[in-house]
Image 1 (cartoon, rainbow, N blue to C red):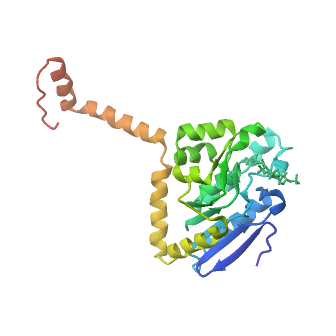
Image 2 (image 1 turned 135 degrees about the vertical axis):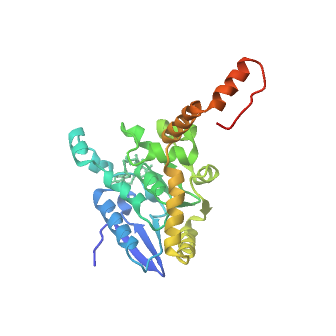
Image 3 (image 1 turned 180 degrees about the vertical axis):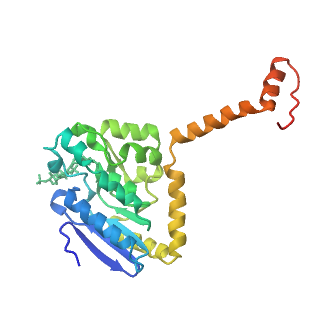
Length: 258
Ligand code: CO8
């Protein structure tokens, strides 16, 4: 039995509903809140009675980012020594599907937390953004990596460099969120979706999630390097030599499959 200060948890059939509950600071993600979320997620992951998870905040804010007041006094040596905020990535290691139900602000670490989940559904008044630039810093929870994959480089670059927000409607058009629901129906709809997922074979659901993430997580860099190595390997073929020779000699190539 654990007492939580910053989150509420409720089991609804095979779904665990986690609600961020730090209303006075718009669910800013202080270390206490983050450890409670991680603890609840890890417990759900190893609990066979839970098939899927919904993570939500309040109507005003899913989460307005990392807790600025907690970060304000930190210096480089302390954040580097502690590997500050690295533990957040554990959210992405959870094997059971997590649906982020986002109402209101999902900013900075809040947007990043939503993107660590598997599906984002948004209330019609939701807003997403990476405003760290206005604080003299950059996204540190995957914003520069995951947002690009979700909405494309140009728009992600614009949001990260200007600190501007996008609406739920734009987030849906660009594929950051899978659907929009009326704000007051959002959590209900997320739980409905989570129940449907929890009704399927748990190992199969875990494997499906793993495969989607494998495609999602391979980097352009590794893809380009792979391509380059394969391109180089064609230089081991007689047919490559023949093809280029034929071009230079203005004749038809005769390939021998060697
Ligand atoms: N941290 C701490 N407190 C916050 C935060 C925050 N991120 N956001 C809001 N609050 C507090 C305010 O200080 C205020 O408290 P108080 O009344 O005691 O002063 C209360 O919440 C309500 O906020 P506002 O009065 O500002 O409410 P408004 O409706 O006027 O504005 C906004 C709402 C637009 C959301 C505004 O609060 C805002 O701009 N917040 C900051 C957003 C931001 O910059 N987020 C990025 C933070 S940096 C970050 O996330 C880095 C991530 C690093 C990696 C994370 C790993 C995953």
